[in-house]
Amino acid sequence: MHDLDALAKEMVAKSFSDERLTKRFETIVRAVGRDPTASFPSVFTSAQLEGAYRFFSNPLVTLRQLLQPHLDATATRAAEHRCVRVVHDQTEFSYGGDPGPTRTRQSCLSRIQRALLARRDGEC
Picture 1: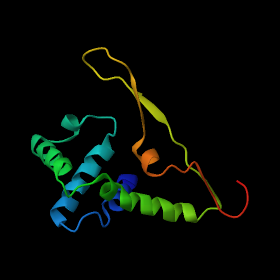
Picture 2 (picture 1 turned 120 degrees about the horizontal axis):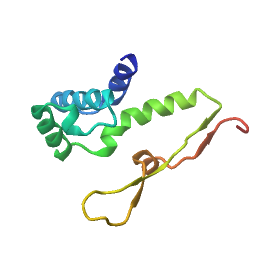
Picture 3 (picture 1 turned 90 degrees about the vertical axis):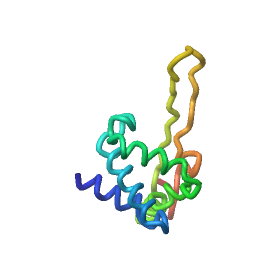
Picture 4 (picture 1 turned 180 degrees about the horizontal axis):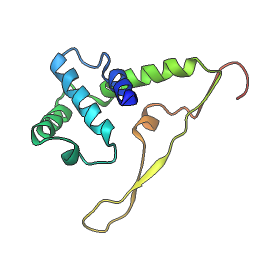
């Protein structure tokens, strides 16, 4: 649970000036963090699920705003090391229903930060 507390603190830090959005985001991070592979309907109560959908459709909520505190903390941690490797994956998704083509999507972070290798003094 300690890691979930640290993740929630890091993700939510300085995210929104509106305290209600910050609190909703923390609820979402904690619920999803307890079981990252589960669907939203299975990790939220019906009231929380409605709140999560309202949160994500709010024009004040942007991907950059959601990820910036985590990206900043990651950059701070990376700066403490001489060499940092950033490993990305491409995950295939198969969408249900009509058996159409499998789509490949890069992870959200790889679109935001494309660095494959960060170097400080010398070789890794």
